[in-house]
Image 1 (cartoon, rainbow, N blue to C red):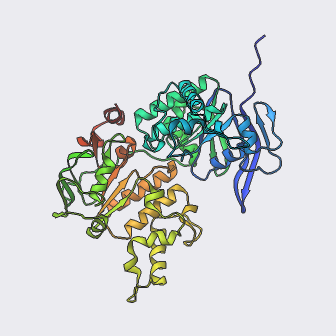
Image 2: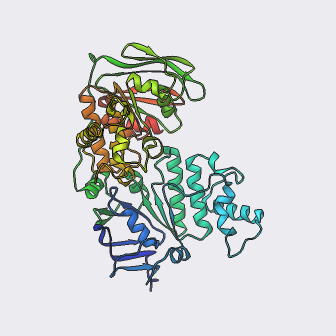
Image 3: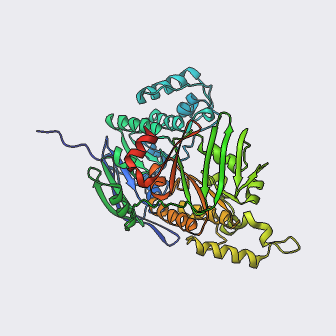
Length: 500
């Protein structure tokens, strides 16, 4: 006789949850097997985070739900019960301590107890070394966490979960800030964990990675279970349809604009240690894509173009006139707008309202002779951009933090478009934005270009620039190494050139 199959690591059924009249989850079932890598997919707001928080005891489901850990029915799930069962979550912000060492971050739970006690540094190091050895990784145990790149911080967070014997590990957007090489390393670690019997639930907007590493995918849409599917044979386009209920056409949109005036002309721009001898042009109505691995110098170049740093050599010309920026205020006054990669800390003021975030760049324009803001002018401007960019909100007075990632990004766009720029720099405009919202953002970008706005769009996701740019510049080692016409090259060839 064959041994019976072990029970699922997690099994849920009839799970519902309502917040203030909004149905976040509606009769959802979910299962992940021991030793399985499982992808949990869905747009922002579909209920993924709510489901994870119910599994880990942060939220209590409505009556009638059934939750089982490793075959044992749980009558009352609490965070402590989930922890004892070996269920751990690595959220996107990692929840680590930047001023503590690697060893302390990994093994700090060994310090916890009912009473204060002396720190045993040798014990901390041995626990940290053992956890990293399980992952097949070596890190400097004495390094302060803040000095580590994000990829190594991810490893520290995984190692910390292993110190309390995690048997189920939820990973929320683990690759959103990683290069391709770093992503490949992380996925290898995920496979290693699964081979040891750990169940890994992989949550990511990067669908290709989820399909690559997982055996099955559970799809949620609007709080409901769409289905559970094997990843073998599943395509990104089909998964996108399941997540959104819509079909998105992926087609090259590149155009020739030889007669359009040059808005931005950069020649020999250099900032030692960041980028060197960079030359490029962007014409009115053109979308120029800039891609390359993280660390190639793309964001540093954006900062120089926007006056946040000063280049050591080279020139920047805007509409034929050379400009030298002392600060980003000079860049804004000259007609440059910059949507940064980190919208949460650099693009928006989270506690403030949608309206305040929208008008913050144009306060003089909506102020009267006394210098006080005119409520009528403010309301008119906010209403215009909410309608123009189809931003889904409750009211303009709501905090911008209440919006989904895609709608927050539209508010950032609105904030800068209100300045009526000549050049729009988009640095990784879809980070943390789900697939449906991404399509909407790219439609807005193409519409802006059609109206004559010059756009420099930066992304480390090659398909984004391939399908949405008129020309693609490949940046590596701080230099522009090649230019591509998307119409003259296949996507896999371009990906190999950039990622290989």
